[in-house]
Image 1 (cartoon, rainbow, N blue to C red):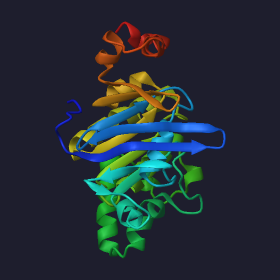
Image 2: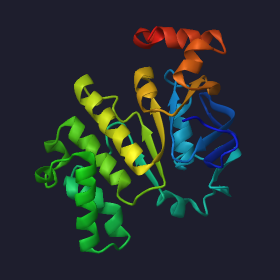
Image 3: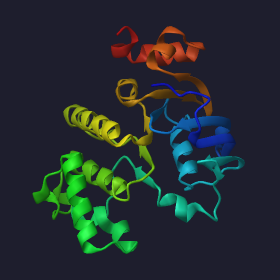
Image 4: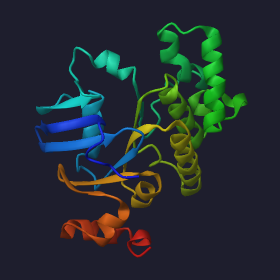
Length: 253
């Protein structure tokens, strides 16, 4: 599956930029995120990939350009409605330590007035979907393993059946075996739900496994995008070659 330019994107960045006192985090950037696909943002630390997620969810305000969701311009006036249509998963899970796994997952749905029957039904669906043990739902985050905490974070992000899922290096802190298991389950979930997702990672193997479309960034700019084969076999710059070669397990796969 590729990112076709003629398809209407779910999210579109039009000349979006972001500056901080320390410098430019994102130069004017144009990107289209296709519906039903997983787009992976990859690159070295500080390249702007997490900044893009935070601009989309409006944790940061762009200094220039505009962001469109389904063709509608996003602004402070409609951000609350937009956030109800988006799930967001961060590296450490971002769970509330004083709430059980169950209460973390249903927190927003309960806030929006869903009935207890609806909450229980949805929680059961999500636990099955993410392979989370039902007996662990009443445990607190501190009583869960790292992999279990990330599954709870994913359940919470999926609780409102979001149209868009944003994942900011969700597996970076996990050991390789747990990480591999979660990657496999996440790919199956995306395929089953036909989920539109944007994933940030440093790991090219993870990008290749999960991504339908890869966007390589460096120093706040998009350097090249496409499939892994496009980047590896038809690099657009010396940086692309160096980045691919640095992750030797895929360089000659």
